[in-house]
Length: 398
Image 1 (cartoon, rainbow, N blue to C red):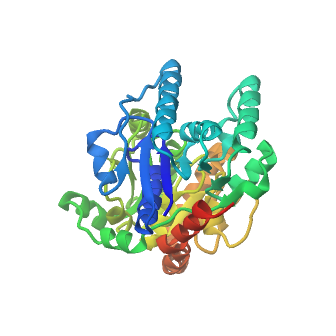
Image 2: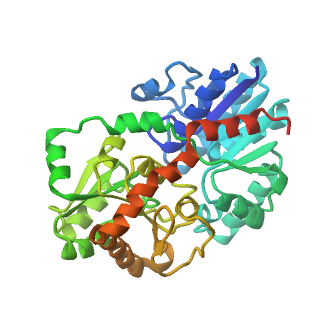
Image 3: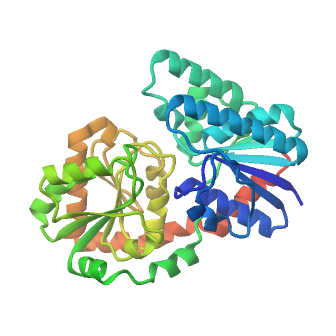
């Protein structure tokens, strides 16, 4: 039995904490002692996620300004140092940047194996900073991350980025994709949706997008793209699941394009799978990613996938072999369709995205191919297969 402390930025509604909780439950089932400590105080409505798990709820409220973020991070670091002094752990495993840095620093003072997980492309994440900030961030990541026992990356592309742009030692890097409980998702996909929503899904060709309403998820470009779809396929409807700071901006864009009758923002849904399974297509419009959880979830629900060829993740999931990341044309991969990177091609990428949607809805043979092949790819990300890999790396001797 190993005693393992797991650190994460927040327990709310994101994909990263759901993956961490999956790993925690699996390792607990294997007889290990697990404690989870998030950066911020867990809101009562999210405590259900921790049912059956040991956790420590720190009294640190989330702050959004720079000074507040710095203050709360140092408060978190001090509390973790105090906790690990009283309670010794064999392994400290962390998700996301705030928790990763805290984990590494705690590792300087404690005799614990330090393992961090990198979920995003850090070059892109910090690429918009000024030269001095980029210089500081790059050297800080190089210094701190090379002092870990292991770094688990979410994709091979992230692994390559860390080696090339941050000089991280290759021998401490391991790529492990996200795990998915296929049986659970299949069961949830069978649940009923509300009668009003059912009418919408039954009477129209639904294109669905799932993700927080943020710049990263690129929904505004998908909305602009959809005006081209409607011109050709007036029975199509775009449904977006998720909440976020850009909701009002997206609503204004929908009104500006006069698409109120064609695009529906349904908000956050605890069970998105029942909507995925009833949709004709899933469209992933991100500007950048570490992987693309909802792509695999769509494949499990046997819903054909169209994704932007963003850095990083979608191409690894949907294509059998490496492709050029700056490809200007639509790529019909083995398991899904890729459209040009929005960051690189902007308006042209919007048109190509619309073209791909129209092609799959009009070409029944092509549509059938992707619908029948989706689930075969999903099996590569099964909970059993991926969590076994996490167990090997986290509990391994190296």
